[in-house]
Image 1 (cartoon, each protein chain N blue to C red):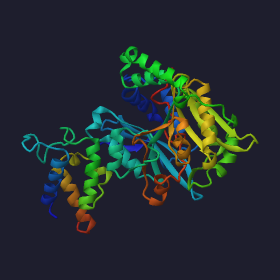
Image 2 (image 1 turned 180 degrees about the horizontal axis):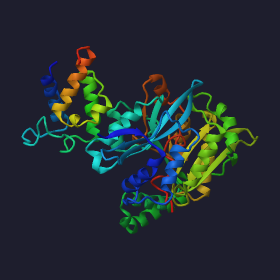
Image 3 (image 1 turned 90 degrees about the horizontal axis):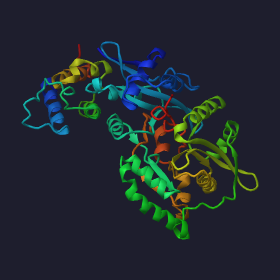
Image 4 (image 1 turned 30 degrees about the vertical axis):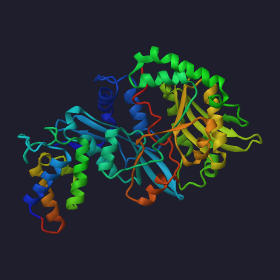
Length: 91
Length: 366
């Protein structure tokens, strides 16, 4: 699965699960989902469950605490790296 | 970068300030005694376990912005030791809520070496986070039985609780009429008859002596010891805002021990049972003694956690009990063998073993 495809899937999940207005001009893959109120603490737990179910990865705590994990693009980067690591293709 | 780490003694003042600000008065200055209470209940209790510590969320500037309390309890599952971590006082500064600090704290807490994590005081938000992180609702533990004694006082307490105290003058005549009817008509009377049993103060020694026989049909039971029980009863008694801590060992007329109860009883107030222990065949007799004691002390409403051993006793109409459902008892375990006894009613985990008795949010600490 490419990083692009992962980002698309995460965006789709966020849009549906957190009822993002399709015409919302402020929403894109670079927006801080938490700062802008798209995802709260409960949503965060749901996101983690989604990553496990959809991509079979457990996100390490350091990644969860990183600035990268606040944005869909960053999440996709992390998930992509973890999936590559899992099959032995990571750096 | 923010970090999550184990609570250290030096963090206690910051934790107390955060708690005062979020869960109590809103002030940054904690009530005198609150920090010491955190210290006693988290760091200095006999079963405090450095492998399962309370956790703090520390921001980039080194300030404590989130916290989860760890209350470790020892149980036995089919005789083998089990460590249970009761998670309590989960909170985060509004400044870091957009970093999901509470969820991160709970996730790290779940990852600890304990066999079982539980809470019996979950809010709606906490429940949803637990579910997202793989926790389950303990359905049986989430059922509360309720026994009214004084309709007037109970109704007025309910109005206060739901922020409708101003309605008291309107509702009072109806409540008084209901109470008068209950006093006159035997079929709906709330009076409890004198029990044929007798009771004495429950000592730690008596509890330890009789626990094995009382809990013999349950697979998951507390593994109390003298030092822990002494500490627990002492701390429970300091929570004065819940009422008087009453501990009674109940015997039949021949002096045979039937079981015991531990409860906070409060005249004209809402009172809570923390533990009822008995063999199933004796549960009704122990419950009846408790109901009579509550009536004697002028309790308005008595509530307790539902347990299967109480089913028959509670189902009898003459006891005037009804059930209330919530979803505040949550559990998480990696091993289904540990979880199953709780989910199917083969565990003895009472409010005395969770966080329900604690007084962090209630006590004046003056």
